[in-house]
Length: 213
Image 1 (cartoon, rainbow, N blue to C red):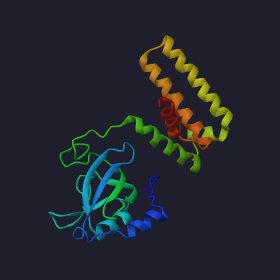
Image 2: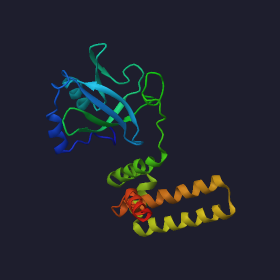
Image 3: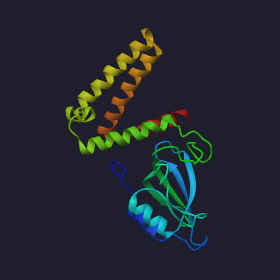
């Protein structure tokens, strides 16, 4: 499943193994949430076999109550849901599945089954840092991010400073488009620097939230 391997901790696995399928006649609801945007995409139902197929394939598989059979989401449209993590609720009778959608989720063509746009750009910072962390662990050749990690903290910090200067220049003498471009470069290099120090973009959010109070 590429970089988005199924992440289930031992605690979560033990919880899932004790799922209560009997309470609702052999089915449990599964809430599907976009892993990047945190938007709720849809609600489906799983029996034990559908759950087992979901874990086995890494793609969300439901039990269709109308067709009375298993069906993989996107089996005809191609808009599958790639599983990132699975959690059970406190009663072990509902699942929360974080997934990466391959396209619109609703059969109407909408992004979600609730008519919402699946857009939450701020959450992309978290997704981006997850990607950068994978780069740090795997260090693939030819990657610019890899080259930054290889050059060390001093160079990464220097790049943040250089991009900050470029951002200031565009803010005072440039265009809005160029300001956004340079500010994006600055944030990218800042996230790389944070990752190298074992810190997260969420740490900045927590600090700003504390100051806001």
